[in-house]
Image 1: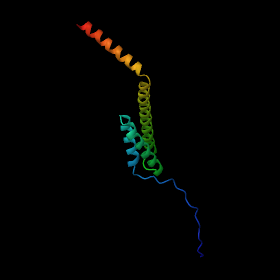
Image 2 (image 1 turned 90 degrees about the vertical axis):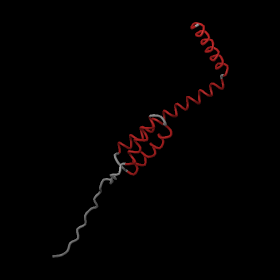
Image 3 (image 1 turned 60 degrees about the vertical axis):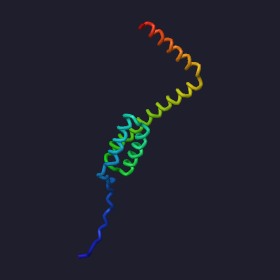
Length: 118
């Protein structure tokens, strides 16, 4: 009997996913907490950690995407709020006479209210 070598074609396998899903869970936790308040402080890290978890294929893909999405939403809301605050400050600096008029009107209303209570 002759020894015959048989060559087998290489078997392609699916990417190996690590069973460690800590990065994706951290991303979701950061994203969820960032929705409750500190949007920029925790939203940006949630996006970064979620992207790293996706790249390393750690944990469930959907969990990582959820962390990225919640981080992005909170970051966007924070940027909108900061934009409104900056706009209000700039508007107040450029229109000081309207700010004084409003304060005078509020003082007049307060005086009327005090007179009615007396």
